Length: 136
View 1 (cartoon, rainbow, N blue to C red):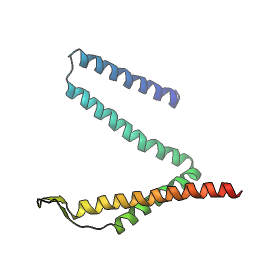
View 2: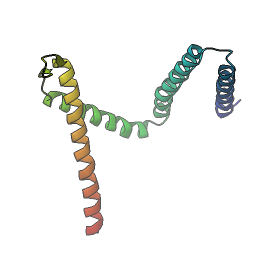
View 3: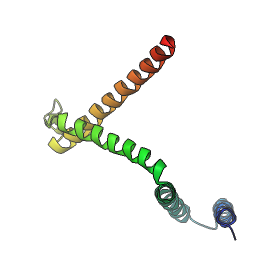
View 4: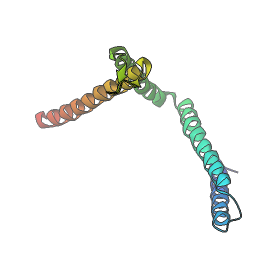
């Protein structure tokens, strides 16, 4: 049996079980807790497959994996740069309640700085592509 046929059978089984649980829920046979648990199981399956299958694909084609790993390393560098540039101040509301401690402030500011760097890089890439097209 080929892998595609096996995956199709698994997909149809999960879809059928999901449909059956939905019908049983609307017939008040199963509780919403079981349906929520089933959703968590499906989310876990999706997360595992989203992580495992790209790794398997990269292991099969090492040349394509090299460019993907370069992209991942660049992303890690951007996040590390954002974290290094971020400040770690505490923020309080007007009433004096703590709004964000040092760690939370540093992480959120690092995310914003990384977002700004990636946004500027994307705008720069678009401008470069358009200008290089005009000059050809």
